[in-house]
Each structure stands twice: as structure tokens, then as C-alpha cells.
Length: 312
Image (cartoon, rainbow, N blue to C red):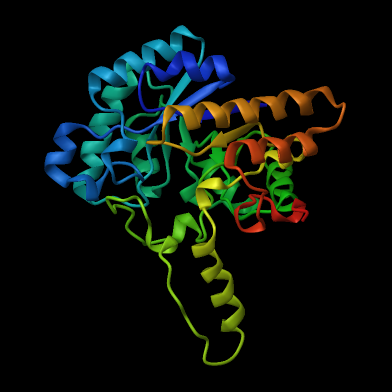
């Protein structure tokens, strides 16, 4: 099973590869794009500069370093949707970045996928989690469009994931296992994530009262997110089960995060991946230990990627 790590600069390549990362993904928004559309109209699903590779020079150096380690680098172009004008700029950028050595593009917008297949048939396309493949039919739909790798949404259970992978044996599937679980379905969320303090609308502390009916349970569930840190999300204990379910890579959230946190997350995931591969057991206990070491508290079902495995 591969470990897909976030990366923001070339100097992180050796550190993260030594920690156990097999592949990298990151984002880049050119100066031309920023001047034309601003960061609010980012070319990828991060709307703050710290989550972007700083320059084209840095992008080139990162790709060179990654390839020098025998690893691949995937570039995000996963804003949920674009304007017609932006499609032309994206195709121009994708053509350029492909010549720089980008190994694949992580995309969510159907219009961009169709245009990439028509204009740049040689590039590899990975479906972002924002593509929301919730069932075998949606995965098959994107595969017919030439998408050869897909990232599962955060909301699927292990049983649901296995149903999708079994029905689509020719697709390479990723699943999230560390950091950044979201209270909403990311592919359907219309919140703008550009607050300078990096606190998103879904994390604001607020109160809500249900006047009547079943809405009360839903409000209670949503309000609980203001009492936990979604950046402490974890699915370490599910890694063995994910591999059994047909997942080929586990993905770590963290673009724009501190290098030290990326390293700790990669090391933790590597330990459990290697332990699960031996088949000797003990990975669940190790996952709980690693979680406490990383975050200083026991895991919580709100931030458990696979709450069906959560135990008090």
C-alpha cells in the first residue's frame, strides 16, 4: 500500500521520503492566475497562499527532487467548478506543468476532465475527493472518461468502499487516513475557506435550536464539530481493513501545514502500513498509541475517519 503525502516545497522531499512517503501531491497557483482571478478564484481547492507551492522555480525543483527519489508528484487542479474562461487557462497551465514533469493532475470538475481528455489525452487524471464517488456506478462513470485513479469521499464506510473497489477492479483507489476530516460532504460544500486565521465556517462556535422534529439530532451532530479539532482526524486503525477492501494508497491531508506535522503523520502511517503488511496483529493498539503521541488525547468518533471501528 502506498502513502500519498502533501508537500509544499522542495526541501520537504527528502525528509518526507525518508519518513516513508511513496508519492507526493501539492498545489500551485501562478502569478498570472492570481492577478487575473485572485486567490478567491484559486486554481485548486485551497484559497490561501501558504497551501501553495511558492513559485514555478520551486515547483520545478520539487518535481526534480521527487523524481530523483524515485517518487511521483501529482498537482491539484481540484476547485469544484470553473468558468469557461478559466478552462482555457487551465489547459494552457496543464500543458506547461506536464512538460515540467507533473505525473498526474488531481481534478474534480467534470468540464475540466472532459477538456483534458480532448486536448491533452496523454496526461493522467486522478479524481479528487470532491468528485464524490459514493457508489460503484459513479466510479465506473469517471473511469469511462479516462480517469484511472480516484480518491474516496471521507464519508464512506469500509463496507461501502469494498463494494466500489470490487465492482471497479481496474481503478486505483485512495482513501484518507490522517488529518482534516470535514463535517460536510466536501464535494457539495459551498463554504469559502479563505479566513486569514484558517478557521472555517463549519468550525465556528455557534448555537442552534431545533423547533421540532428530527432536525434536532442533525443539529446536535453538527454542533459537536465546534467542540473537537477536525485537524486531529485519523483512520490509522483502518489501514489493514482498507487494504483488504481494495484501497491501494492512503492519503494524508496537510497542504500548507508545518513540515514537522507532515513528518509525524507520514511516520505514523508508515508504521501502521508496515505492521499491517506483516499480518502479525497489534496494529490497532499501535494506532491508538500513535494517535495519543501525535495529538495528546484519545481518539474521538467525530474525527475518526471510520467511526464504525471506533471504541471508547
